[in-house]
Amino acid sequence: MATKTTTRARKAKPASKNAKPVDRLDDAIAAAQDALKDLRGDLSRGRKALVKDLDKTLKDARGNLRRVRGTLVEDLDEVGRKLTGKAKPKPAAKAKPKAKPRAAAKPKAKPKAKPKAAAKPRKAK
Image (cartoon, rainbow, N blue to C red; front, side, top):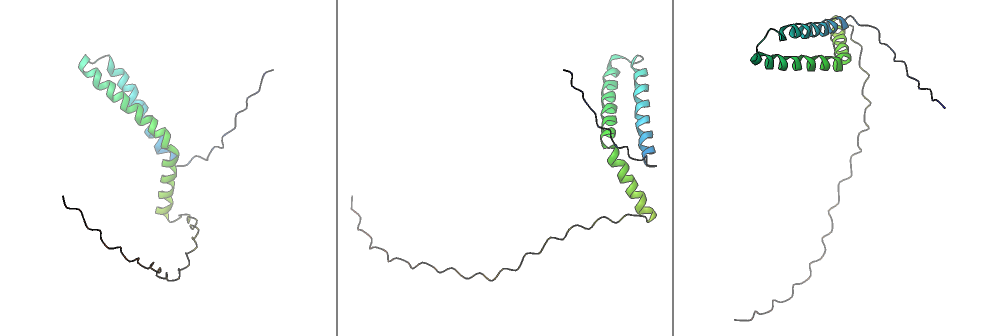
């Protein structure tokens, strides 16, 4: 009996005007990667190691950009709202109930000291 798998549809957020610069940055990194591929054949062995390192750096940068894209766009939107004076007020943090002041602590009664036993004389060697 075959089981049917279902996928959930993601709710797409409306495109922000601040998403365009992020898209341009992603396109610029992609263009740099393509240009780097073209350079590979023209370089000597010593330079190929440099190209390899640069390629890895570009791949990491592009992956990091994809990972933080949503947060970056939201931050840019927030900065834009603050600059234009249309900032949405953040919801106030719930006030924690203040601790009730404690009553002054009473000093503990000290146990009565036991009288010390007389010291035993030591044996002389």
